[in-house]
Length: 271
Image 1: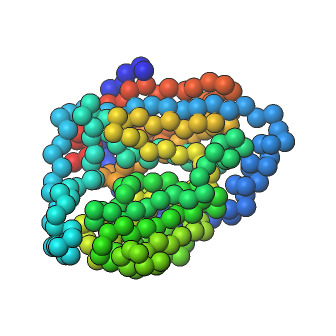
Image 2: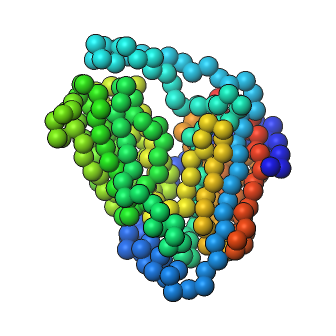
């Protein structure tokens, strides 16, 4: 991958848009049907984000409730996850502009449910995406103590779900989002304040989250010019000189892969 270097400390953009994008779920399904009857070409987008400094030490969190269960786990801050090779994990990269079509092959490959597990007194995974209405959030409590899942999507109904410990049938529930969100939604547990996660519900499947190698890939994008959004929980929109307001545009060509290369991010961005 071609290497790019971002070394200037950038002004953070903490502004979060105070409304949801009110696009109906049927619209995204219609884009799949449209693609089935059209000669639409598809291409991929990939890249790698590197934390350009020593991996930060993850602070141990205060665990002061349900000590008999949660106290036995080494629970640490997940707000800045950096892999051993410097990969920056848990960065959301997602299509900001509305797609002209959605690949039927991609749509058919998507699972019906996205798992959010209360396990070891944390949320697993810490970050996730949901394509509504095709996908539902499957919320599970795997711990031997009661858990709570609470979140408030902008313009959508809030959730405040009590999950008893298994094997109670109420330890697992499905949740369906009704609106697309412009940014990931914070998930909390009111019983255990140290627990947090982020979920991004969108009305199309063109989104990804970087892994511990800092790598992301968005597949089968419709050909054309698209605008993408980059977001991280420490700073919100990942604002850099090259990505004003955390946005960038690329041209997707049929059968091709657009490679952003290795992008190095200054630790000052996340302070």
